Every structure is written in C-alpha cells, then in structure tokens.
Amino acid sequence: RWLVAPRSTVVQPGPVHTGLTLDPAAETERLLDLLVR
Image (cartoon, rainbow, N blue to C red; front, side, top):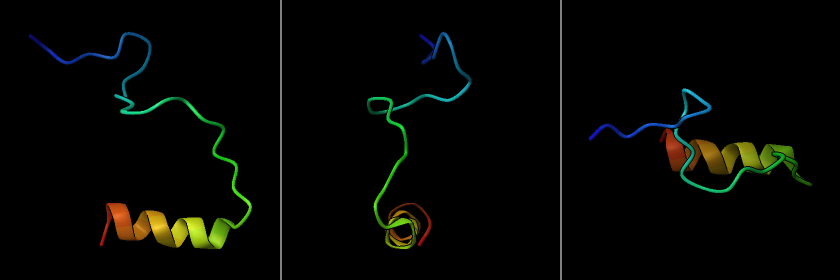
C-alpha cells in the first residue's frame, strides 16, 4: 500500500503546530543540526 496524506503533498509525522518560537535563531540552529548536518 502507498503512504498517503489525503490533504497535503507533505506527510507530517507529528501534530500540526503554528511554528512560533521565542528564540528563532536558536531554533534555526537546532533544526539545521537535526535535519541537515
């Protein structure tokens, strides 16, 4: 069977969130370390 997301072309592994953060620079670094580096 295919893994599908019926309302989006992106499969979201977690709950939907607003993306707000108190420290955008630190969050950017954390995401870069987690997803890229």
